[in-house]
Length: 154
Image (cartoon, rainbow, N blue to C red; front, side):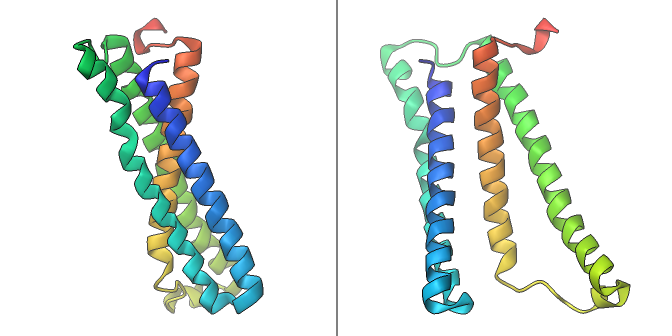
């Protein structure tokens, strides 16, 4: 199996497990201690630090003295990165404009003048953006390797 595919699968597993554990911990804490103290469950997002272990999948080929990525692999990686950034920007547009639209439609434009976003939300939204990027990149890598696509084949 190609190192990039291993890396993509690892990223998907880490992101999925982290989101599942965080959501489950939040629901349990919400039921037990209430909404204010349940925010501590977001500490489980620290498991995303495991994504830093991704480069270890490329060391095996380096130790063999072989080529880690050839031209096709680089094209797939570049193409997947473009797709992941596009999905991430769509996420940011939805988060920023979706909240604004929801408040504007529900409470009127006058409500937008008052600050309505709690201070702990921006870091959580940023962590969610990381998860969106990593999952989009990983899924794109897996799809491209399955199909055998390269940028110049179209």
